[in-house]
Length: 140
Image (cartoon, rainbow, N blue to C red; front, side, top):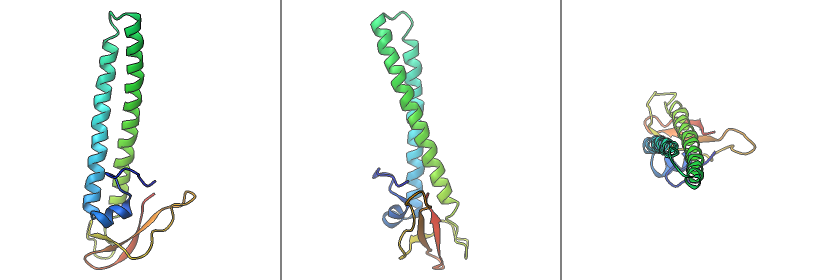
């Protein structure tokens, strides 16, 4: 699932523009930023629960809206955190060159990116910078 977020480019574009290691670093930083957002939203949700005590009917209605909003933000941020972290780890597990076993020494190969339609695996062709061996990384 390619991302439309400019801070999280799809794998092929990220390797082309930034290199694999920077792409991986940005994916991890973005995932952890979502985790921090989830924690802050959960704290805000608890604060909204705390504000129920001694509140008028209008304030309780507003607090209920805040609880629902912050719960939604918390769940979305946790889902996004999990997706970004697992996606980065799945790709990182494929970043070892099968021939020379160099880790993360990838560049984008000249072959076109394959798949991605109708649920097919999206295969990104990469090339080892050290030994020039080419293989595909599954980016689905």
